[in-house]
Image (cartoon, rainbow, N blue to C red):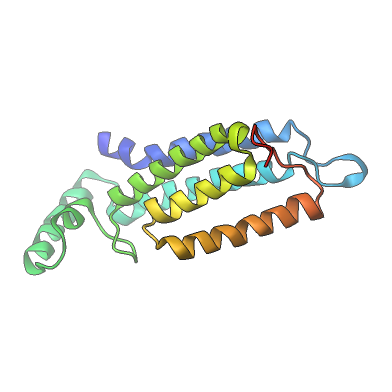
Length: 185
């Protein structure tokens, strides 16, 4: 039971967070005057997609490892046999289950997910101080460098391109003012 809660805990949290974001954002107006996109359009879509993909992840991740106790015991026996035959697999990877294409275990992916959730919450708290663009830039760099362990120069380049595109779409094209924060940037 506890393993099931730990496995679906991050997904349940993200489903709740995405649903709440979509509901609150819909209150801002999905469409504005004259059929134009309203201020709640993008956050409603983003929150809904976040909840949807977390639900899909929750439903499909249980099928990989066997949902019954017997299946988990059989998986553990197979894992122990495989880990005895292959010495090059790290011990924590063999005990935590299968790895993804990047070699990360489910436990590592869950830790990364919680780190990103924390970084996003910190970003939201920094927007009134730094403004949207600086807070968003800091978030992108921290996620790329700290969570994903990417090199800093390419991460900064990708962040600069993303900021330019964000500015062009929201400020120049949609004419939506972004929060400037205390610094006025």
